[in-house]
Image (cartoon, rainbow, N blue to C red; front, side):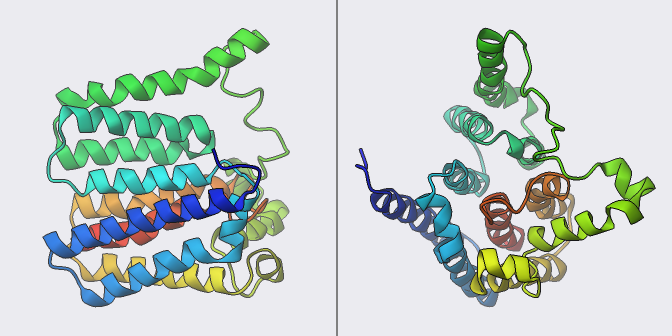
Length: 273
């Protein structure tokens, strides 16, 4: 479909990113009274985040994360609706399941999005329409491993040292021993612009755009009326980012953190409305 070159895939995916981001912002602008400063800054930062070389390198390298970024933006469009039809719920369940099937490490964020659906729409009886396609996708890796490997497991070992770098218990009981590794994870998780490793892998623009995004996200949360719903929205990006305190975060940087920061940018607007 896209030929031998990655450039056509990059152009196609960027078109989808920009189209979805544009639709989200236009929907918010038309339907809600929003802070124009937050609106303008969020739109600008959204474009910058997906336009840096290190972000586009994920597309050039044919890594599997970028389709989940598109799925995440589509899910945000559904979350902006005041009500969801049965078809909407089936689509959301399929999208969440597909996100897991593509990138299993996003499971904590996917489960948290289910909580958001329950809190926002409150029609728990209809949630089976989400769970049917979601459960189907969740089972596929287990079935695959059982057929071809003889074991009904998600992964041979989710705590393998190749990508599991820190233990939560070590943070409490052995912090001095793992302090350097913890700081390494944090520097990459939050794109520390003063860290030489982050600058080498991400350049200058991406870390600055991420820190601007974090600042805007916190500002948006602090100036708006607090509620259970707004607090849960606030936690969505954290559910995608927090696993990478413990798991691999720096390989093909920023592949593992992009989904969390895309949600941070969008959730600042959702909190606002």
